[in-house]
Image 1 (cartoon, helix red, strand yellow):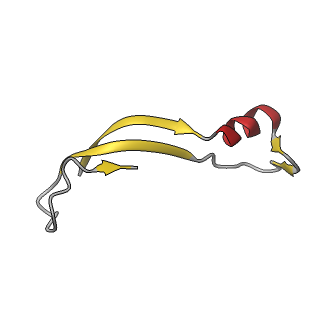
Image 2 (spheres, rainbow, N blue to C red):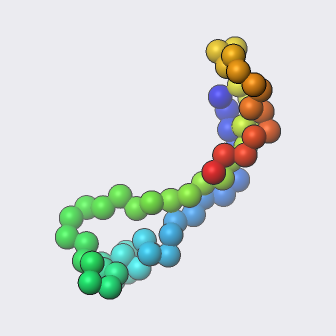
Length: 60
């Protein structure tokens, strides 16, 4: 499956962790994976895709 990514972003709370190392009473004390969000569209599928054709479907 090939997808075309339109945009990617990170949450405000993650930016706060990066700049202040904490949010409220929660303090980052170890490495932490920041969450992110991407939006994409399916542009191509392989022969192995046997169910409905997902081309044009939006992925979030």
